[in-house]
Length: 291
Length: 281
Image 1 (tube, each protein chain N blue to C red):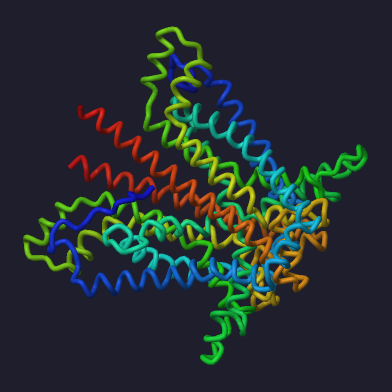
Image 2: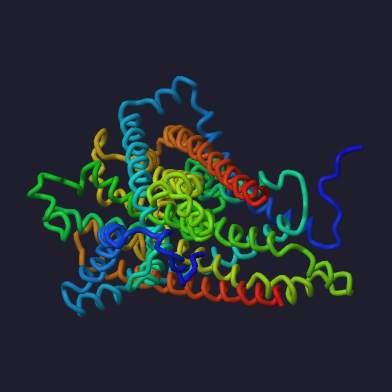
């Protein structure tokens, strides 16, 4: 997204006096320190405050391990589903002209505009004991709310747009010339997709996957509404953090929180790396065109 | 003749991908969302009106929208400064700072919530310095604003940053050579160029902050009428099996969110038009 090497002001006429620059940098960094860096440091400080023994015990706790497993499971289901959706949606929207396209794009963004709590609630209204399908599900012994399927559904809902919204502008910008050439030369649709489209969109796709994964692992509000907070069964790692915190087990809560924070930092690092790769690719493509 | 749904193309897979897209979106998003509206329709008009205008509910709207507005405004001012500094100046650790701006997007909201609540409690790292000043943040409406500032921090930075990067130096040089000062150049040239992005960032931050739940509930104290946000009120109604009431309040929140989403789309179209208009002229 951003250029890793900010361009230097060309001349004194288009930059500010030194003291203005110093003041602005100080203001920006103070703001970020207060609202970002201090909280980041505090997570690890609080986690390790009672010593490494308490930290490791909190993470090796059977309930914590069960929560980690459930978080990984729901992420492992939600992310591939939304990759399939994102690629299909981007193909339809970017490669074809049809009526109602802008409405469809807006609808894809809808989950971003919906409060996570409402995302959880709609599934309770649908599948809960007093929901529309609740009685029928009850008769057949199927549990969705306060069970794993509900958690997976809520996670899928909140992460629907991530891959699609990265791919749609990218594929729109790339156009359809290369695919058309492949098709005219006799390649099948699948071959065209695997050999032409996929290599062209790989970085954008990976970027979307990273954002989608980060959100899927960390989702709290939507999952909290459908989970029922049953320890060892329907607790994801963020929900486990909440329970520990509310039981005043602060060190344990922050130990689990630090795991999630580490995952978030890994996702940020991957995202930054992908941005740089994509930028380099863009630049070399630009250089090829000027040749 | 009926107008054709799509223009002809040699590429395959239109029916398959569009069908899958619409089917998936309907199943996961649209049909369940419609449930909220249908469930609210089960109520009579009087019941609906009572559910969405009860004093406790109105107090929660005031807090939710007020705090979201203030947090988004705060982030608009500081986001512009952060974006400006990241694009225009160089300082040690800049790349790291740039990458970390996205932390609130990646960090689970529950983690943000317990961390902020700990930091701003009366013996926390930050709270202990605010206490002598008579400022209480944790368990007050001020805490809600702090949490919302955290989770909506990246929006303005990330919408303004690319616009500042694309700004052409020539225009500023021309203005400077015609005798304009830096402040005048900022006010007359740079600010009008970033204004659409600034507005988009503000609206995105505002929309996100309205729906936020995880980071707020730990620091807010959740006192009815004082520091209870609307999403928490919905959760409370669900826990008491008041599905109709929960759906009614959700419908109010959803309609406001949809209006904001529409506004964001219009703003983006406006800024695209501005950009294409400028390059055309």
